[in-house]
Length: 336
Ligand code: ACO
Image (cartoon, rainbow, N blue to C red):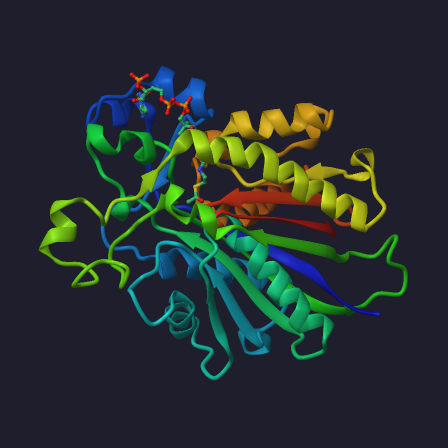
């Protein structure tokens, strides 16, 4: 049967390391508060000119090289980001230009922290139906250029890092689904009722006169706003639901999964999920301590780090789940 397989992974984070201590010099926060509430110890931010597509390019080039395919064999680009290079066109088009592979479809996915799972799911459908053989799937963010560096913005600013992760998804003829690497299933959800619990209002046509004008800037509508407690409450409900849905769809139980690579919003969220499902610590791969929340990039970064750390090997059964702005949430079960 025709299925999709993760052929390779790649990641890139910028070189400027920003510790919690560094942030406490520019806003009223502390290493202790950030570590205790989130688990984050540091993050990497761009230092100057790099755009989201620049980070995406570096992660993509690695993934393509490791997949053993030529750039010209990539038949579609799907890029998830909430921090696009520009309002339009989509960042996938800027990435395509930098990769030098014109003509193939390039698609932006705007599903925030669930963006990678949505992208993987879209790519999986295109491969399953025989449309494409190799699809580049990327999650990339430059958050640091859109964060409010002040006491007022501290609740959001301390949470986010810049980074990119990529995978090449390839078509395979799977004969033994119990053993051969492939995407088993993906499960996607959203509830726009909560769209304004975590959002950046401007620029946007939802504003009164201009997408962004003096009024919007004065009111700080171009900075992200988050109702942290509500997001937390929903995350610890929806991520387990999505995970359970994925396991049930494949008649698997928690102990069948070799590695859990969850979205990285808060270490406390992932710890609560691990506790609820009685997942042993060594089976959950977290990177938030090092990279903070890189939104659409957390899962592909996690996969690449896990490979390089020797924790993720070919043939292992992996479960990913994510929750984020929208609200959006979802899961993916795959044999790596
Ligand atoms: N440093 C120091 N103090 C702070 C900071 C900070 N950076 N931020 C907030 N505080 C203060 C608050 O002002 C508050 O002070 P008060 O008690 O005097 O009013 C106190 O710390 C407690 O604030 P809470 O918001 O109650 O802290 P909480 O324990 O809820 O933790 C956090 C906040 C970490 C943001 C948590 O709510 C969380 O992780 N929420 C989920 C975030 C998330 O999952 N986002 C989704 C992904 S992002 C995406 O999709 C784009």
